[in-house]
Amino acid sequence: MDGKTYELESPFMVVATQNPVEMAGTYPLPEAQRDRFTARISIGYPPVSAELDMLDGHSASSPLDDLVPVADAADIRALIQTARTVHLSAPLRRYLINLVTATRGHPELRLGASPRATLHLARASRAYAALDGRDYVIPDDVQALAVPVLAHRLLLAGTAPRSTPEDVVADLVERLPVAMRRLDSQT
Image 1 (cartoon, rainbow, N blue to C red):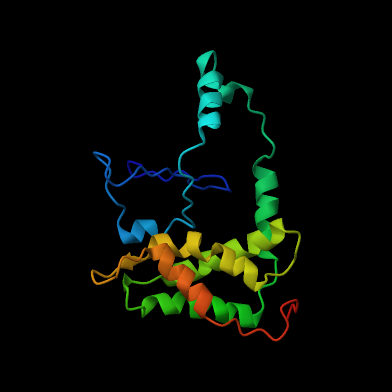
Image 2: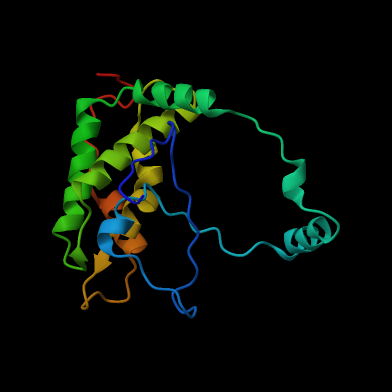
């Protein structure tokens, strides 16, 4: 800022919210900026009961006042390091690349996923496996994360017949074969 660099301690991450596109003053992010977000998760609106609880909880005080940290930066750095050690086999690396590459030539897409998307899908799959208590990635990990990691990076072609990027990724996951000899193999 103003010609001075400020180092941020690891881990540094950005969590953002997105309003519906129709909202006044809301503009879509350019492709290059969207590509830097690992994943997009849509949570929708809460059920009525949760919204009632929210009204009750925010009336007298801020619920943030009662928050207690469950991890610190050192814990998060250790978790990141653990996820980096999770094994991603050669056949699964090939599957990741095939999945991302398939978006680039898809007839319903004007813009497919970038090489950065491949990296993010691999990292997210490793973390997903670690959270499941495994030190290796399985196809289910990749498939579970394909839509949230890839869809927000894609641009539909003007000729796309009522598809969404999520539909395109789900279809690719369904159609692309997973060339694995043994799904439990760590080779």
